[in-house]
Length: 159
View 1 (cartoon, rainbow, N blue to C red):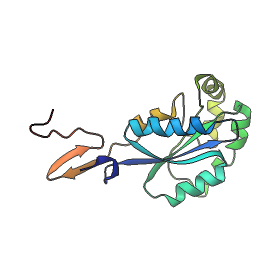
View 2: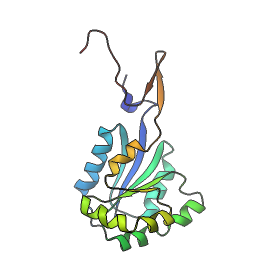
View 3: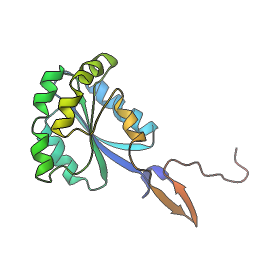
View 4: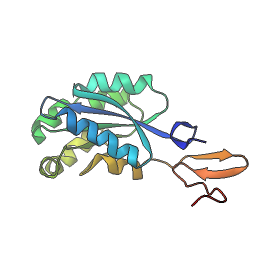
């Protein structure tokens, strides 16, 4: 049994907004999510809000949209200003988490967190991989056993 491809897996859409986030930062964010039991559909860098929202709407299994923002706080607020309209129109119906590629950028985003929440952002995170802890836990049944996604399965005779 593979939990990472079964019905108990959690999936998110990840995109790096603007050009100031490197492809390596986007890839590493996806890898850290994977290590926490969350599959990431990585859109890469240079993603716009409309592109990210369109991809989220195409992926029914995705539970959230995670945006890596490396620009200044005021630029990020402008980039996400259209989120309010997308939420009101029903185009974005799942949580939107925002974070920077490093601790320094997160500190700047923290200064505009209230503005981002007014735009429709659910949470501003220092490490977007922490979104894994904010998503609902899925359960799946394997041969009569109920397991949380990411649970270890004990196999007799195997250490």
